[in-house]
Length: 280
Length: 280
Image (cartoon, rainbow over all chains, first blue to last red; front, side):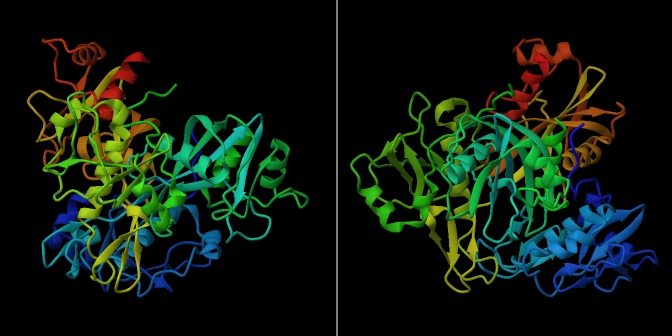
């Protein structure tokens, strides 16, 4: 079975047919078992156990879906989050992670789409928050979901990992980059590894995917076989990139104090890729 | 080896580091071996052999990359294409297909992003056409690439295929839908099959991907195992959905006149999925 990354899972019943029914959404919001998310500084608020916090519905702007039949909504937060909320993600319970990702991705998108990209006029939220329509030209705009490839390149038993400038000291993780228009997943993996590390690869294999709500990505986790180990690191993108042995990766993932590097956190799909690679 | 869908391949060297160097791009555009794409009615023009047509550079707006060192640009077309150009795609040579997808996706995106979605002010093309910047608030916007899952559900040797209302008579193809914020690829496959056909599934397996420039999607081709064969078809989305035997699929893909259905065309990843399924 393929591994499951954090943020995976079905989450709520999205009940998409209801999105086009504002009358039904208003009825659902008025039900006594309806609830809405609580936000704090641009992020969904968590309780002491890392679960999402819910309140009575006051502003039923986003229809998130149904949780065992119970309607779940969300207002829009006042502000976007400031950077990736690493601390909060460390607390987040996995059960609520898909819904956290959904609500935050949608909120991030609404926060940057108050105007129509076609004509510049203001847009308004429609379909229970699953699109915005332009009051001027009538264009409808749907939420973005940006595919990103993230990959482990292997060469004779060693893995290529890199450091982005914003990482904490000693952390190394999988290289990654946005899939561009006109590319397959496989072509994007090959291009990113060529651009960032100067290696050519073959045998791209899909491993797992993960929604990533900073601001709204679909992480597509892969492995690839490097045809050589000579690196030409793009230091405009990375602080460093190096090959690590299986023993070094195992020590890092086990949290050994003497490990050669600090692994990515458990909520990152890069960690899932490393753990999956160690089991192979 | 995984199958290769039409539009697959590395295409040009995108030479992404040059995008941030307008001085270098201007030099490249002035080279005698520089060329730009020719457009016709919103689509790249093809010659009699299905190859892209190139001309001397007059308006070096999009930098597509380098073809064996030779700079390749594109102006923006005057208008978007009207619908999916099935006739033209049937003529397109596979060698040029990745570049066709890249240029058309980018052009489609520019055509709908002349204004800033944050503040509504006009945007201008920067980075050789790989982003747009707002003259008002300074926001930078990158091209969209919308992930779509497209999948074959199998139940005891039979495949589930459906008909969209705009298909030609007798055509059946794989079901598909956009990945939504907060979803994995696997969750999107399960949701779409539940919504459109009323079936529950397990064992989602990634097969292949394909860029699809109508307007700018990343098709993610998968298979899944259906847990039952009772269908509840969503007739607001589909004209029909049915199970087909291996013999029926084989006859359709072979082009037999008496086949139970007309298969998707060779440039659709659905065709690749069917052909791959028949070889398994």
